[in-house]
Image 1: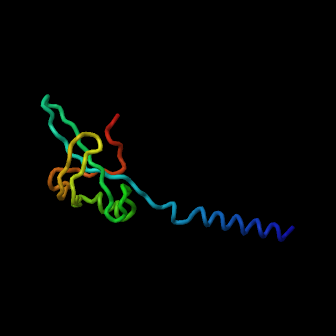
Image 2: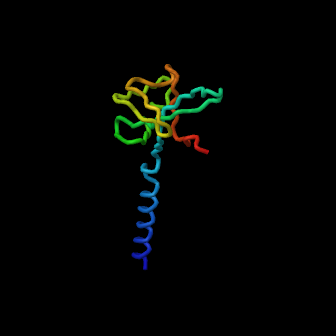
Image 3: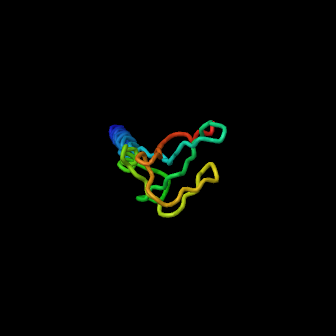
Length: 113
């Protein structure tokens, strides 16, 4: 019986150790470029373009990449035209960020509500 208790205790210890590992501490978000435009009727609309993380090739920005892209001086570089996710607007190749009027949003909805 004592042997069974020791095995059970070891199993529980390993389970708790595994469940509390570093794999659960990663935060990842999708990011997009956004710019406000004035419509002919005077109202404003936001145009958005999905951002691809150059380090991974997908839309997830994690850990230090996420901290970097959310920094106030970050400029996102695209090398070929980028189609808007929500309109027919195309963004030409170039550098985009706060210094030239484009906002970078991470982990937010796309304003479809």
